[in-house]
Image 1 (tube, rainbow, N blue to C red):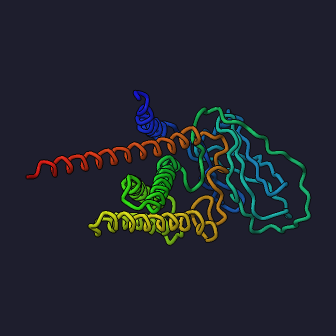
Image 2 (image 1 turned 180 degrees about the horizontal axis):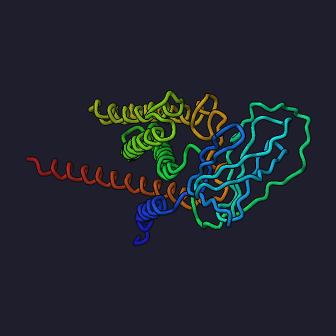
Image 3 (image 1 turned 30 degrees about the vertical axis):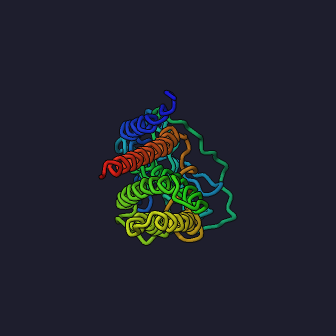
Length: 344
């Protein structure tokens, strides 16, 4: 029995670890933009980069299997360089990806960085075979750099795990409501569903807030007409309505049955709006509407050392909070029973 509650502090301890790692682990180097200066010279701006000729800096342009080395590279600082590619009159493509290789930063990629306007194109043209070397960074443990997301990738440790935990608590409330529907009288499943749904609402609100903040920095606005955003709002409002329904019914048996039916439909709505519909409609979220998910971004898996503990930490913390609500409800029931026995 002494070991029964050992798991409860694990969640908060994991969240402390996540908070420390999120704040202290630096972001890896990356390429922000490539701007044409005069049509022949291009300027590249980096984030957290260490551009230095002493670090064996190399620049390549690639389009499909065609690779074009850039020889004339000038370094304007640790975060800025310029290069002037020697484009032939005829090219296999107009759009080229940019690779900047450094012994410190490793291999940096900026997709569709260079677009050549005034060159003729011939898709059958064969360029000399040149391989882009793969260089590993020597900077140590860092979060991966992603264009447009940049430093806000740290919010991945908070926003997404909150919804994982919300799904778990909503699923527990769903199972408890099914059990209550199978009973004739009010059972402990009714209170179990109520407590789990209460935590699910709190997690949903926190997920909406962190998502709105993330949208402001990455999409430029606090809210967009996105099916997953709208579905998250509707789902959270639906679970909040569950508790309003409970407060509006006085008779315990009727309240338990109505709340159980409502909770079942709320969970079905959650699955439809957050798991099914976004996959078949246009969405700005990673992994939806044809967008790549974060698992394909995470080349060095450094995010996983923090993301997975964050998911587990939020789930365990949410379960602990639900247990506290259940305990408080039992205390109220015992107090009411004792008070009623003392009445004349």
